Picture 1 (cartoon, rainbow, N blue to C red):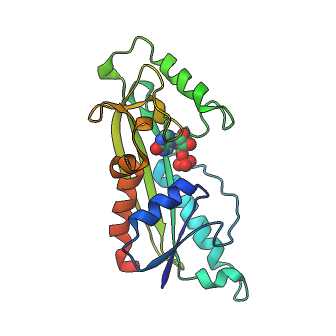
Picture 2 (tube, protein in one colour):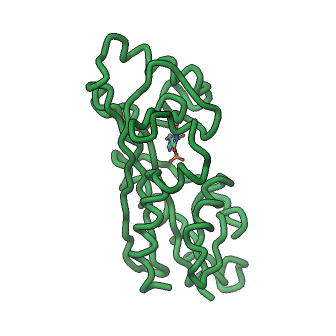
Length: 211
Ligand code: IMP
C-alpha cells in the first residue's frame, strides 16, 4: 500500500486529511508518526512557495536517508504539506503568508484579532472583504515533480470576535452565506466549505495517478 506523509503536527489537520482521503487505498501518516523531526525555514513569499519548500524538504530528507535508516521504508511515499493564512483586502492582503507570525508567533489570537478589527475601524461592510487561503503541495517520491492546489473561502472581517470553535482568526471571519463566523460553524460544516477542505479535495484528484 502507498503511504502519504502529511507535514503537520496539527491533530485537526490530520483528522481532516484522513476523512477526505478515506476512500483511497493509502496509509496516511503525520511527520511524527513517520519519525521525522526536522526544522524547515518557511521563507517563501507566497503560499505556494512555502508549501513546496516544506513538502520537498521532507521528501529530500527521506530520499537522503541511508538504506538501513528506518526512513528507507518511506522512499516511495508522497509527501503533502500545506501553507495557509488570512488575506484582508483593505490591508493590502495582510497578514497573508505571515498570518501565524503576525504581531509575533507567541502573541495570542485574542490580541491579533482585536488589532485587526481596530485597523479596520470606520471601514464599511463592503470594504471588509477577506479570504482564507490554503495551498497544499504534493511532492512525488524520488526526484519527481511537485504539484500544488489552492483553496479559498471568501468572507468579511467582523466588528467583534464571535464563536468558540475553530482556531486562529476564525472568530473574526464572517461568512455572509452562513450569517456567522467560521468559529460558529461545527468542524464538519467548516470542512465542507473551508479553504483547506477545498485544497485537499483538489490535490487528491491531482495525485491519484501517483497512488
Ligand atoms: P499554517 O499554514 O498552519 O502555518 O497556518 C497559518 C496561520 O493562518 C494560522 O496560524 C492561522 O493564524 C491562520 N489560519 C489558517 N487557516 C485558518 C483557519 O481555518 N482559521 C483560522 N485561522 C487560520
